[in-house]
Each structure stands twice: as C-alpha cells, then as structure tokens.
Image (cartoon, rainbow, N blue to C red; front, side):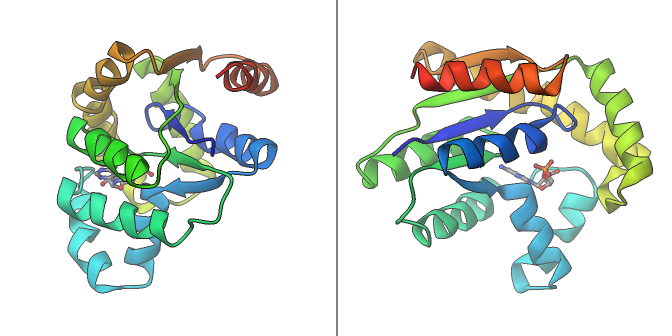
Length: 189
Ligand code: AMP
C-alpha cells in the first residue's frame, strides 16, 4: 500500500493536488472535511452534532473525528492506498492514524505539506468564496479556520518531522509544477 497525507491550511491547494494524486497512484481519497460536510448536508445524527462546531470554524473533537475516519478506512480495505486530507489535525489524531495503519500491517509513508503563507491563503480563499458558496467560508469563520491551522494544526508537523516522514513543498506557484514536485517526492518514498 501507499498511504499519504496531504497537509496545509485552507486554500493551500490540497483539493487540486489531491485530485491529481489519487489518479496518479490510484488512491482512495479521504477528506474528513468532505465527510463532515456530507453528514451535515444529509442531516445525519453525526451531522447534527458537528454542524455548529464546523460553522464556527472550530475543530470537531478527536473522539468523533477518529471514529468517523476509522469507519471510512475500514470500509475501504481493498485499495491501493489512502490519501488523507484534512486529517490528522492533532497529535492525538496522528497517533490514532499510525495505530490504525499498523493494525492493517501498513503505515503512513509520507506527509506532503503544501507550504503557503497566511496572507496568500487569505487572498485565495476570498477568490474561492466568490465562486463556491461554502457556509463556513464567511469572513469571521474563515479567520477562525485559518487561525486554527496556524495556531493548532501546524503542531502536528513536528510529530512527522522527527520521524523523517515530512516533505515540505512550496505551495505557491504553477499548479502543474507543484504537482510534478510532489510526484517526484512520492516516487522516491
Ligand atoms: P476542511 O474542509 O478540511 O477545512 O474541514 C472543514 C471543517 O470540518 C473544519 O473546519 C472542522 O470543523 C472539521 N474537520 C475536518 N477535519 C477535521 C479534523 N481532522 N479534526 C477536527 N475537525 C475537522
């Protein structure tokens, strides 16, 4: 199996690069943000629980997030590998993910960090907001999500860096060039 994590702030280009990666390496894409949005849209029990938390730009609890992620992984055992997107966002989630991979006799092989400054991210999201209509993308909430990333989520990175699994790519530039750089890293894993 080939299991990767794509990491970066909202608006870093994770969605675009993920699309290319899942095709190139035939991976199952698991985005916890997309899964939570599916639940809120379909008004499931889980969706009702997390709706307000998401709308305020806060992180859903580790317990809820890990349980949902585990269920999704276990539904898809017959795959070439996984591309995790938006997960893990805490060290507890990172540790749970390692445990889950180990229980499947596999591992997280690499973490691709798309490095983009806070300013670039804010500009990009302002543009995206004009195109899509994500309820969690209005100004206050957006600030909260970005702050959440730069204050909290980034603390997951040293966890992977210490184990030499972190690969940082400059997320500013031509989309195809960034993709080429990512694939050369993945090919060397
Ligand atoms: P995203 O599209 O990845 O930015 O996720 C949208 C929202 O879903 C986040 O702002 C959080 O409220 C929630 N969420 C997604 N992934 C996680 C996670 N790994 N841990 C906690 N909350 C999450």
